Amino acid sequence: MKSDLDLKARQMLKSARLYCTAGRVGVLKALLKADGALRQDQIAERLGKKRFDKVTIYRTLDSLVKVGLVHKAYIEERARYFELAHNCSETQCHPHFTCRNCGRTHCLMDMTIPGVKKRHKGFLIQRQQTRLEGLCPACA
Amino acid sequence: MKSDLDLKARQMLKSARLYCTAGRVGVLKALLKADGALRQDQIAERLGKKRFDKVTIYRTLDSLVKVGLVHKAYIEERARYFELAHNCSETQCHPHFTCRNCGRTHCLMDMTIPGVKKRHKGFLIQRQQTRLEGLCPACA
DNA sequence: CCTAATTTGCAACTAAGTTGCAAATATTTT
DNA sequence: AAAATATTTGCAACTTAGTTGCAAATTAGG
Ligand SMILES: [Mn+2]
Ligand SMILES: [Mn+2]
Ligand SMILES: [Zn+2]
Ligand SMILES: [Zn+2]
Image (tube, chains in turn cyan, green, orange, purple):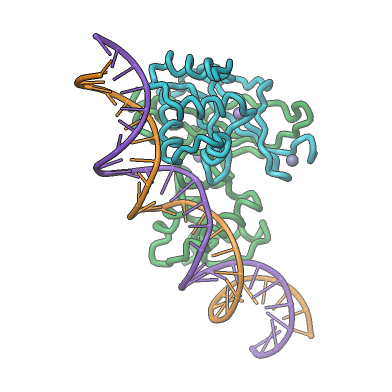
């Protein structure tokens, strides 16, 4: 079963020079299919049959983050969210919008965020992430 | 001991129509004195003599957030950070910069972030928060 | 295949944050 | 000022996200 997605995931791992293991392929595929950021438990759930220890999933996410394939999303929840970096530019991620009424979070892929300058009083800025809050279309 | 700070804190609580209790005054004073965002344990520590239960501090923070005196800061850590809202505009908070090398986080109070539009495809945007990542002056 | 490097699962642990409830305290009313 | 009411507090028990160390399993590469 070498699906298209499967090959893509393996490809991504290979070019990031990461060991190509079942767990990593699975996690990556889950993130590729997802339409937003996921928590470790959501990823585990989507791996279905092929169960992996949560420690493995966390470590897998760490390695994916380290090579830049995945980003942590800054969503206010107790748990951490991860998503693919492929919808973000090198220095800027798409914003996440959280509704004050229903609590749902949306990825605003198509919103353009004005970038800040790369340098500010000695700070070298390498990534900019934006969190938005307000009312979603359903609640506004 | 009605310090200046003390009066200010009481004043803030009163105008937010919150019960003016020792805990709230203390937490508020801690945040007023702080130069950045604090976690509950850091606040507890700064309350020193007057010990409060952590549950109380969390609930106090919740009430302060609800009335808008305090904001949650979006800093990647296992714990939640809180800071006064008084350095933020109604719709935008100052950015937090986290160094990829030393891990320290700085409040960039003087950095101007271009604001996004108030509406985007049905989303009503009421607050914008920015997280920056890169190298701090010491590590650059 | 064989070897070395890396990843994985397990089990035990740490610690942040939550909940319910009775006692304490703050505000309002009489 | 005292009583009545509304709100906050502490405690203790709990939930659950995330971490750590280590031995066993898996991968890459010759
Ligand atoms: Mn997203
Ligand atoms: Mn700040
Ligand atoms: Zn909503
Ligand atoms: Zn630094």
